[in-house]
View 1 (cartoon, rainbow, N blue to C red):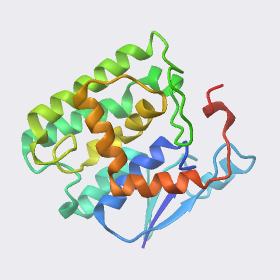
View 2: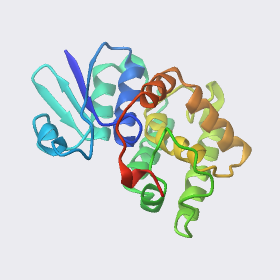
View 3: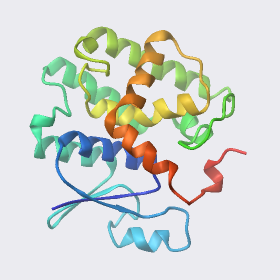
View 4: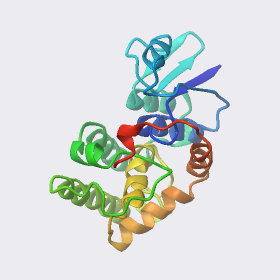
Amino acid sequence: MLILVIGNKTYSSWSLRAWLALHQTGLAFEEILVPLSQPGSRAALLNHSPAGLVPVLKHDQLTVWESLAIIEYLAELCPAAGLWPGDRDARAHARSITAEMHAGFRALRQNMPMNLRKSLPGRGMTPEVGPDIDRITAIWRACRSAFGGGGPYLFGAFSAADAMYAPVATRFRTYGVELDPVSAAYVEAIHDHPGFRAWQEAAAQEPWVIEEDEVA
């Protein structure tokens, strides 16, 4: 029995990462959505995880929280899903850029929050955001050049690295970031992914609004 606890699909980038990885496994799972930034959100989340944050994966009696830990658990649970590349060098590179995404790019996160219902071209482009964009697009170009021959994603086939960078791809579209051709094609590939399309369609139907993520 797999249960994934997530936040709002419009805004919750960390939930999207875990959800895409779980979708990639092909395993059946139940989804519990806890609306964020509501009066009872914190208490509701603490019922699922001691960290009080999303996402949370429950598998029988086990609870796994934190997106990267969930991805690693799913990779062990379902190795046939290919969440990590089969080649050792590619796998090491994928883990490196995934960890970099997990720990970095704070300016981008703060100034361009994920919002799948808005088009905000030009917003959030502070001086601090530019270097984050440059680094991310350099990562994408390097991966596509060295490892991307087998498909449209960073390592050809969809992987954990794509799950981690998918929310960034949505930000680049929401905020109208000008991209080089390789990065632009990758953003299109993420938005064409069947799992992401299903997530975005559900986000469009959500009634909740989180004002701090609306970018006035």
